[in-house]
Length: 557
Image (cartoon, rainbow, N blue to C red):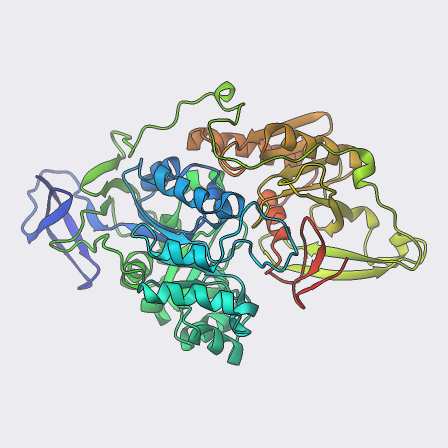
């Protein structure tokens, strides 16, 4: 039995009082009001821990065990995790790996059954696995699966596709919620999507969308990730509808996770004047209620999951994180739920001990060589930093593409996608504007959601160096600038590293430094590039098979 004295922040009753939280056997056995002795020290504020309501752990490039250790430092006591990234590579085997790894940490995971493996289907891309309706039914019946993951195939929902609807029914049959993914849906389409039994959406990019989502009976998950950032547009909902709003990071790169997690959104909300109780409700209570989680609200009889902070001001610091009655983080003792991994680079150079599916063959110059001919139409993806949406520009070549376009043609670069699940596959080559690489290339095996190889470069030579290094490592990230190269091997499914979070973040920072040296100033170039392959986000995307018009859902070439 252990007692935690301090200023108790009771979000349920919206009051702060002095007292003690008594913990025994992983649960809170008593929350009592009492005077705190005058010891001359500042007593901490005890409050419910933070929850990330929608995250793909794979995007941190850390195994769940290590992700948990890092997130707990920032006051996160649990996450709703959708493992559809590794699901697209390894199917249910990949989901099982994430659950096993998560069990190695003292942390709360609510894992989802991936609903869209592959993301869209219809033969427009190649994934390493398929999780069909029968597979979803199998997963939803399990106690270690708590939700049906984001239903990205919103055209299938609106079209009443039998396979899609069977997956949704499987979740409802077991009393589990269904997460949504429906960018741009308003009006009747939003209502129909919600009426299919989908209860959240983290893709709302405007306040109008957010309010329409809530009006339709869905909860809005405000996303502030490494690439997609919607907080600025949606933050008024914190005070408007705190019981219908949650926070998430969705895709958070290691360098960002090391710096902070949901705590940063709480700080930001307080700094911008949003009500304390509404903010804490969004960060902790609404997700617990919505996902029916027994993770505790700092009440007697609850699971002992809570945090201690040094104040209720916008610059608050997490002092301690308690999960399942165990102090997994103490700012003075620098404790963790598990010590960080001590693996060295030579230990991760091989891939036999990690689950993976990677059989791509190296490319040659002939494989990515293309020519634009007079009267042909060049389809160009226009990318904006901080957004997953892309513009679609069509340029008719009359002989001089520099004159045909509205900007210098050297701003347009090749993007290459290569199927990693079949040897000797032919790549698809497209064109993209917005990365501004002048003397280098970037490549990775993180390409949502099928996770084939994707690369963008200033020349074919740079592209080949980057792509072929990814193939040699059987997954990873590579940045080339002139004669220099930085890399991070990802031997776990081509998505994650077994290294410590600090080491992964350090190498990630080196990669971004190399990208900047090559001319690209994007905040999150790798995540932005990865989403150019996701065929369910408008407007022009590229897969290992086609250029894809994701606004009209049709093949371009």
